[in-house]
View 1: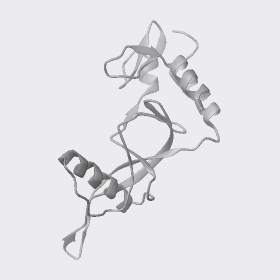
View 2: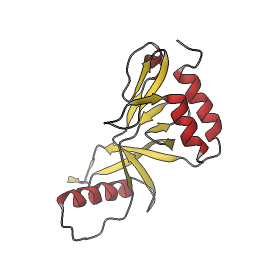
View 3: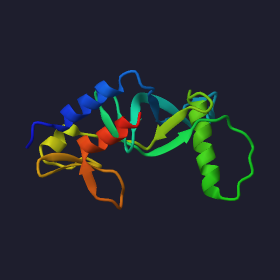
Amino acid sequence: MTDATTDAILSAARERLAGSPRERLGDWAASRRLLGLGRAPRIVPVTDAWHVGVLLIGDDRVFATGEILRARHDAVRGYTAESQRARSDRAAAAHRGGFAEGEVVHLGWEELDPAAVDRGERSGILSLAAGVPHVRWSAAGATRPLADYLDDLLSLR
């Protein structure tokens, strides 16, 4: 194993990201009944993180991205595809849950375990290859060294 642990690489990225805007992660909230009536489903904020490619880097946690959408007010819209309607429903649920109109919402994210990667285990899109932490940035693509991946993306900011 090299000196560059997954945690060390992510800590260096956090230092470079300091002062950059963050985006919030959301999750479905259990609907409570109010006066015997069910409430519309909603997505509530869980935490925030820097969005860097396929990773969401928080203060002390790291996540793999899931679905990315923008919160918006629920309105009657005509759709030709059911998938468009479902996506619009999720955006409206985020707005009902406390996200501002137009705010980016990450949904379906997966928490990753950097310590497991350093032990040689795979954690979501992170893995260890020849003692070097790697990230799978595309489902069909090969893995890439995590440090190089983050350096490339952060150099664009």
